[in-house]
Structure formats: C-alpha cells, structure tokens
Amino acid sequence: MGPVLNGQFGRKAGTIEGYAYSPANKNSGITWDEATFREYIKDSKAKVPGTKMIFPGLKDEKRIDDLIAFLKQFDTAGNKTAAMTIYRRKVAAAQ
Image (cartoon, rainbow, N blue to C red; front, side, top):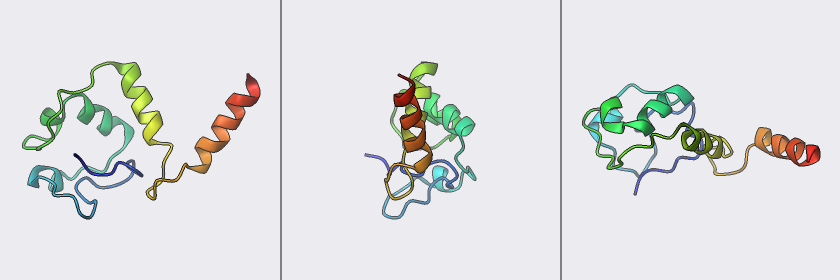
C-alpha cells in the first residue's frame, strides 16, 4: 500500500506524513508535476532507482491520461477541486 495521492501535483516526493518512504524517494528531489509523474508511473525504478514501489508500470498513454485526470480531481484533503467541478458541469451542459 502506498501513500495518499490526493494533491499529488506540486508536492515534493517523500513528504506525506505517516508513510515510510524509501530513502531513494525521500531524497529524489522530485516535485511532482504531470511530466515527472508520467515518467514515474511508466517505470518507477528507472525514474527513482532504489524506490521500494513494486509496480510493473503503466505503459498505455490513454490510461496514464485517465489516471492523471483522476488524480487532478482532488485537493490535498481529498475534496474535489473547484476546477474539476466546473469542467464537469460544462461537459454535462454540452451533452
């Protein structure tokens, strides 16, 4: 089980309280943005050698796009962001 991913983008790697990160993640110097997350989710061990994340990677670009869109819905407290709520209303109105 990994750390909470709410508010992922803009956060420094290895900083969620209560999760035992590997030294590699804690000391990676990464601040998560979309491009960095894409690299990591495709091959975490290549992006951060020494990570303890056991995941074969996600290679399909559409699935990565969907995952990023899902993560961007939530702020650090796990609440839906205002931007996503507005976007969903616009999509619903257009249908």
